[in-house]
Image (cartoon, rainbow, N blue to C red; front, side, top):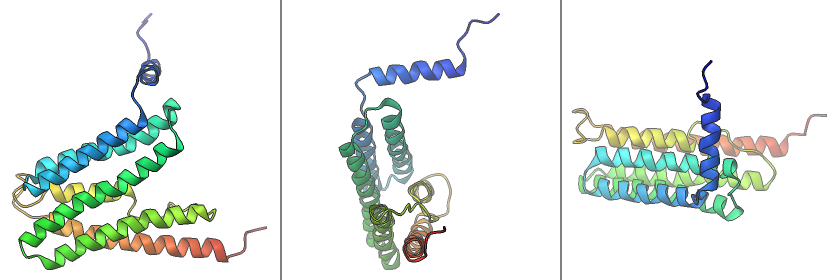
Length: 202
């Protein structure tokens, strides 16, 4: 009869070790933020493939901090606030350097799309926060944080000169990001309007 630990037992062991460690959700959030800043620097240096990889890793950290917070019990209201704030800055700083790259190539429409993408992504988060402050759950919409990360990552990995292909997907990715984020803002506005104006079912 085998005495090797099951996968569930291994997960429990890892979980307990993490909880007992000094690792905090805030440390994971700050690591993700630092990686996204590095990704922005790599974009400025035209190292798009590396920027895409680093941005993906940083974004994964952003998904792990919340889960680790709930799993370990080390979360705090300030930690949740810090996580949400850093998430918004991370998207903005990477898209800002992408906009600077487009500006250097005189791609005015792409620069404008970057501005729209930044504003719309901020509004996606703002509409959810305001809705929840009014007591309305608001997670609807097609361009959630995860979707936006995937779109921008694809654009960086397949940017001109990234090395994966001869075609350019950075500008199209930004156009899609701007469009879907704007649609998501509208979806959330209509969702909240419906929730607040329609009578509750008996």
